[in-house]
Structure formats: C-alpha cells, structure tokens
Image: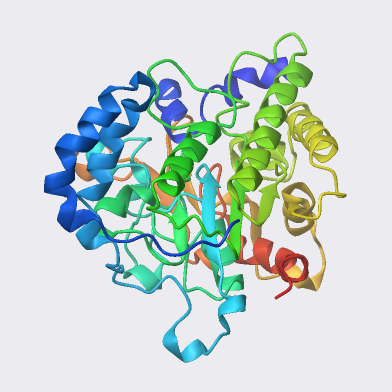
Length: 410
C-alpha cells in the first residue's frame, strides 16, 4: 500500500525537495581581544599554518572576529525575557533550535532566488498573514504566523524563538539562544549538491560557535529543541520494497547520535519531536476531499520511526524529553470533543492550491492566484499541505506545556 502512494510522497515534503516534484561548564568570560587582532594576526596565522588540521578554522575565526562589534546588538523585538519579568537568573533559559520547517524562523535565505517558487514561498504572502508580532508579514516561517519553536520559547518565558543563525552577522548572538533549523533539512538524507544542512551539520555550526566562544561555553540553563517533520528523510524511493525499517533505523540513529552530541557539548536538556501522523497531512487527505481518510501506508513510516526513536532515547534518560507529536496531532485532528471545536476544518488546509501539484502562494501570469485562502486561519489546523497554522501550533504546544515545565522544573 505504501508503494501505491509513493508518487504522492515524492519529494514534496521539504522545501528543497518540493522543487523536484514541481519541476556545561561555567568559566570566566573570555577577554575581548579584537583591538589586538591586527597585531596578533601574523603570529596566529604562522601558528595555524604549522598545523594543517587547524587551517580549516582560520576562515571561521576571521569571520567571527569581524562580527565582534555586533555581538551585543539585539533584534528589533526582544527574544529573551523582558526587564519587567523580574526573573531569577536561575530561571532564564538559552534555547538552541535544530530541525526543519517545523521550527525554521528564517534560515532559508530569501535571496537565493529572485522569484517566488515552492522553495521560497515562506518569504511571500499569504505566509505570515496572522503574524501580528511581525507586522502580518512573511518571515520565512512555514505558517500563517508563529511555529513550534516560537511557542516553546514562550513556555520558557521568551517572546518568540531565538533569531535565525543566518542573521548572526547582522544582529550578533542573541542572549536567548539561536535557531539553526532550516526548511528542507533532514536528519539523515542529504541530496547531492543540496545546500540545506542536515541535523549533524547544524550541530557542527553550533559546535564551532561554542568552540570559539561566540556562543558562551557556559551552557548552564540551555535547552535544545530537535524538531524534524520527516519531510526530507522520508520522501524518496526507499519504500518500494518495504525498506521503511532500514531507512527509519538510519534516520533515528542520526537523531539519537545528534542528541548525544548536544549533551556532550554541554546542553543541559533536549526536547525531541516524535513524528506526527504523516498520512493525515492534507497532501494525502486531499485524495478523499479532506474527509479524514488518512493514508495507512504512509502512517507506517511514523509508527516505525517513533518506535525506533523511543528505544534509542529511552525515558530513563533524565536529560531528554520526547514530544509525542503523533499522539498530539492525532488527538487534535480526530478529536470530537469540545476541546478543539474551534478547528472547523482539521484535514483541509487553509491555503489550498488550485493545481493538483501546486503549492500555497503559487501565482500564474500577471500575478493571478493559483490558490484559495480561507477567511480565518484560526479555524484550520493545517496551514498548507504539510505544516500547521499558528493556531494549530499553539494547540499542539499547549498540550505539551505541562510536561515541558515539569521536565525543566519551571
């Protein structure tokens, strides 16, 4: 059954792959050496040149030193607790986010292309239309507003997710943390010439910033979110011969390995998503006119992945919390109780393409819309074929809030 639906899985889940379908350790703060850099540079270069293994870091050191003047510049909106919060230092958190479109807040560079297409759609309307915090404008988030990382940040006492790592050169390192998630990223899969960083490569970037004290090595109070939707990892041809088990084993190995790397680097607590019910996404329920018929074959992917990850990151690990997105999404989507009556449509997307293989925001000649848009996104759980609305994400994270607060002793 999974094979028969493969032409719909294709590569459509992720930003990059969709294009193919459509053709702790406390230590004193280090001194600021930047004024001395012009004099130290010849010496440093000589020392680095004596060790070929260190040469790869030279360019990185130069790039981060050039940003020193901006290190304490904050974004136009505060990401961390405000001065009026009067919180004890012990209750302030640093949040570091890894993953894909579930958590990306603008790492997918809008300048990589000069026109709207399926891979850049998050930078164009109607994305961001419900995001009052950002002027109801698109910000690179794959939603009508805020996404999972934003709502986790709110639970931690922040206004929104820490800034995208892409903005580090302009805004410095925000004290609230940093978001490395990129739409189209996978934990295991990386296509040839695909510039989107995998989970491991996102951690590599984090490690370098810690190594060079761009991010403080004192990671007391740090929390990491690992939020992968399965979009890139489970979008290929691997499932034709019942290879779901092998692929899931590889994907969950990489996630578990990455979580242990984060802990070894000093991150105190790690939150990790389990996969949602992939077969209930609008991309699959559209075939039944959004009447609620989830694709049982695709559902097998979620079940297999989650079973593996629970075994590799067992509940006995007191520094890791698994967020059961499968249970939460299912509860909201299938719920007939009064808890979620605000969602008048749980299977259909608010933003629906007119073309069978089109995308939300697609336009034809002279800017003619090739999509329909609902009147009120708050009445829809899904924003487009793959990602929840802002209201959908709020409902999901409200379900997890108590467990997260207990886990983090908030």
